[in-house]
Image 1 (cartoon, rainbow, N blue to C red):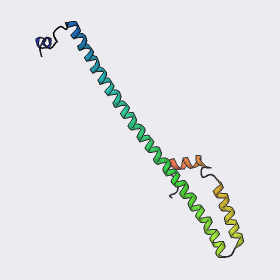
Image 2: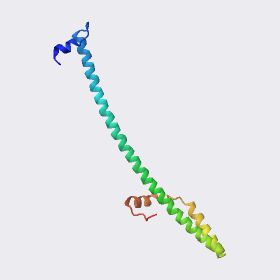
Image 3: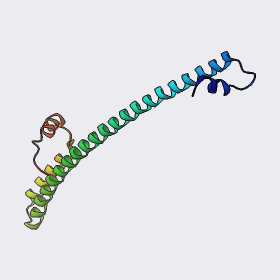
Image 4: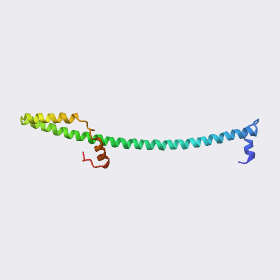
Length: 129
């Protein structure tokens, strides 16, 4: 488009200065829109990175909790097996010992040795569930 065509697009009664001011404003708006689109892309990238990190942490904590409580379930099962054997054999000492051990075990926090557990968990040296 040449200059005559551009000038012909200016509405009657509008000065060249007004047209230039409007054009400059439109160019400024286009630059702002472009800058905002870039900011939106950056925010989207940050959002994706955050979602990835949250998902990774969720998976890690889920595995940690699953392992911790599976291990506890196995120990509790062993206590009940001892108690059941005591009942079957009518062995009062085995029953009481099993109950005391069970009570002591369930009172302890599953996260009492969390630091040691965390090191083993991160290094991948935990025993399989």
